[in-house]
Amino acid sequence: MTAPITLEPIQPIYHQQVGRLLAYLLHGKFRHLTSISSDELALFFELWLEQVPDLLGNRRMIALQGGKVVGTIAIKWSTQSSNSASKKRQKSPSWQSIHRFGRWNLFKIRIGLSLFDYKPQEGECYIADVVVHPDYRGQGVGKLLLRWAEQFMQQEPGVDRLSLYVSGKNLRARKLYEQLGFNVRSHENSLVWHWLFNEKEWSYMWRSLK
Image (cartoon, rainbow, N blue to C red; front, top):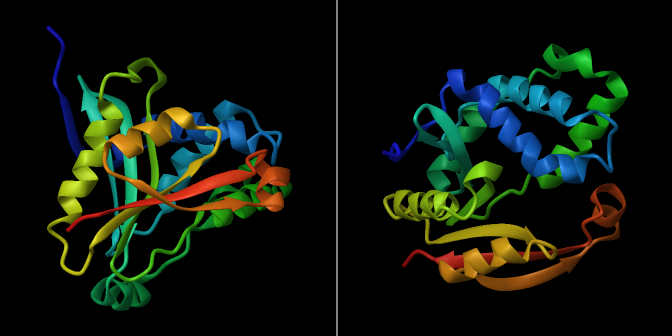
């Protein structure tokens, strides 16, 4: 009998597994930026997760099956209250604690992460990442995580839309988002992104929560 998939907020005991999922999601892009291996990138994200500040307006959830992390999603949102609280509590990650990857590699990874760091507008909940373990793709895990984000944010005062960016190459993900009611609001082409990540075309999508 297959164990059910449950959702819960991330805890430190799952940082290693989530780090590997994030490396799976981003290594294809970051390999054009830095020479570190997939295992090294997974370790970087494991250590990075320990440094990410816990701020109002940020949430990471994991999908678990039998104690194994089969997916994760990170969201961040902006309302007047979350903006004021975040400014009071904001704390930057301690990059010195992960200097083991070398200054040059760390510098390039920081550039990459900064380009992915979208700032949501007031009333917007942005899906920063959603990734499913490769062995569990096509089993509804991604849809489950996205449905959680929708239901969670419907309870948040002042938030009226979900948004995300999807690569023009990722037709499978875009099809899923469209099935869940997301619409393309704009297309963007960036030579910088093409040079750094070999990903030139991106679509900005969002759906109303009202």
